[in-house]
Image 1 (cartoon, rainbow, N blue to C red):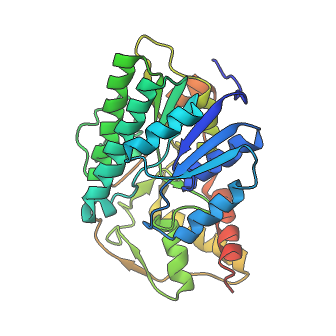
Image 2 (image 1 turned 60 degrees about the vertical axis):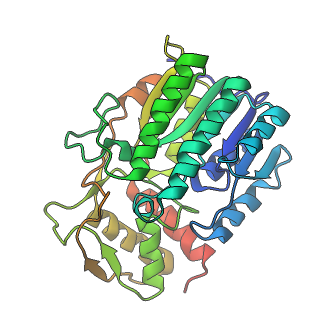
Image 3 (image 1 turned 90 degrees about the horizontal axis):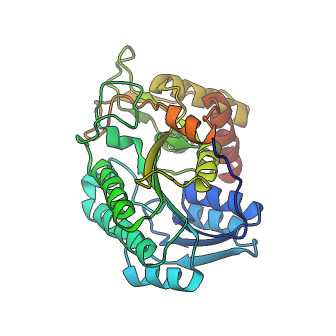
Length: 341
């Protein structure tokens, strides 16, 4: 197992630096003295104030440079590579969300396909030590076999979002093969935590509760065949990325794909009950969410469950934060950030 530590003499380009994962990764690298160039278009897919709040935490670091720009603009990306000559690129800029891809497909093609193509082209013309990029557990579609393994068949995506992520893996593989770009794709499984994405269910549930509104649970009220999700705490995700950054693929094909998930799926209803307990503890009063049960939405899958064997073998790491610990940190942050009573 090759588990080298980060090289602080390298320059790291993080796309989507004001995003949830991008922010936490940037902060971890900056704390260790790395030079980080962050780019983000600060779009309004969700509350821009939260993106600025994350950015404001990064700005005091002398070794942080922020560029407001869009990865789908080729000249912006080319200029960044020309000026800063990054050694390591972590592409986390993407239009996220399964359901939104049904309403607004254009932005997914712009950001996830054209944007990623621009990153690959830049890595081709300005060679890098390692390109790490975000894929997603959604590439597994409605696969019935669990846990999901990286060798599973993933040619039946059930959302445009999933299709764009599968496309990223194919594009990276091709560029890696043609131009010897060491590249690693990461299939993230339901990432959550403080300062997270407001479009994610757990965050939305908290919003609804404090607004005095019921929450929608998309499982038909079927507790026997409830949805399962492999919820992965943000610190575990960042730790996994950090370890992989220094471990580019060295095989004949320099492209690898790994799951980063908790390897421990939870029923959606158990997750909701845990969130209620954590919010109760954070507020000092009993919190019970009013629930409306609805059918599963198009593009949603019944279960996500990551096999993390490959990741563990590569870098000796397996996510282990329990949902009790992770959700408590989220609940404490939420109550403090929004000063809810």
